[in-house]
Structure formats: C-alpha cells, structure tokens
Length: 86
Image 1 (cartoon, rainbow, N blue to C red):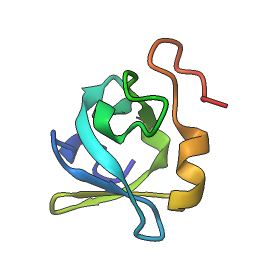
Image 2 (cartoon, rainbow, N blue to C red):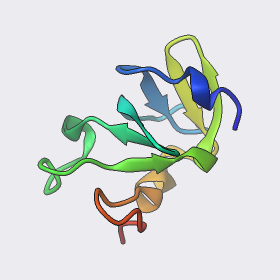
Image 3 (cartoon, rainbow, N blue to C red):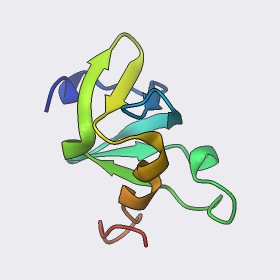
Image 4 (cartoon, rainbow, N blue to C red):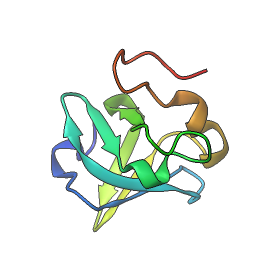
C-alpha cells in the first residue's frame, strides 16, 4: 500500500475527498491506530484503527485514504478484535 511504511506519529489523516478523519497515534501491525481524541462522541475512551488497505498515499505530513470521509467511520476497526465497528 502506497507509502504505508512512511506513516509517522501525529500525521493528519484525510479521506479521499480531503475531509479530515483524525491523527495518527502509531502503527500497530497492519493498522493505523488513531489518537483517542479523534474517536468521536461516545467513543472518547476507545482507539479506532484504520486498516492498511485503506491507505491511498502518504504525502508530507498527511495520510490520504481511499475512502471518502463520510464513509470512513463505518470502516474503523475495534480496539481489540480488529472487526469493523458497526
């Protein structure tokens, strides 16, 4: 996946449409762990993960995903199981 190995802490994550998604906490295996503050109302104490397969490119300090911002939340993975949240 284009540039996955270049992802670093505190990079911005945006959707394919440029919509802001969150901020990288770190890489864990084949997933991007987002900071908790970006998890949304009702999920403040949970980390969300973005699968490696959703990364389109890394440019500068920004990770662009293959999905639009309005659908990315449906593709987040849970903290423990790696199953999509839904």
